[in-house]
Image (cartoon, rainbow, N blue to C red; front, top):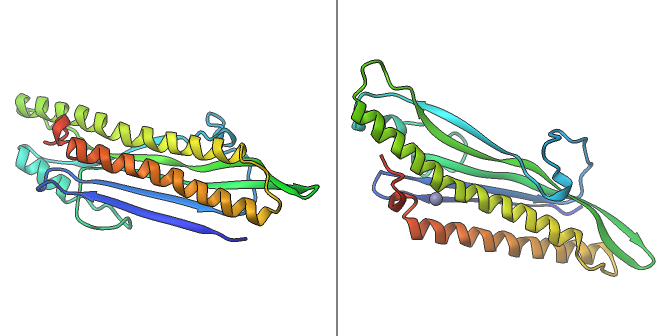
Length: 213
Ligand SMILES: [Zn+2]
């Protein structure tokens, strides 16, 4: 069956302070369903699990910490520079169709994958400057606040994609259904992607929220 993959990266680099990278991958097409991997999240209702991972940074001064963050290797995701944090919407959509009596409809829609948030982590060395520790803690709190909105938008997008497809009006053929369903999914994705962009513009990628060290 037809498949489509969207890979999108957004990078913002306000003068070396902060960078946000969002990669969204949506894969559409026929798939074999596998058993639930995470019972806490019912992928057949549009829920997607969120996981947080950390990368360690080191330093005894703001500059050293900034340099350590800047040196983080983000791996295979579009390397437009180094950044501070990342939220990846790493999920795809699978569905099962039923065709009968001249119409085709979705009978199951699943969101497979997760949203991954990646944040810096600093274990303050013994005797670290208390002002530096306080500054770091404020930075992390604000960074988490900023990134949470990107997580929430990803969750909302997944839910809306699911609900839209599972309630999609039956079409005369499955080809028509999937064509229209995929187009609608694109629209939803674009809507939430636009919200990401607007949010980052509004907050200068978190800088106005204090998400800069
Ligand atoms: Zn952002």
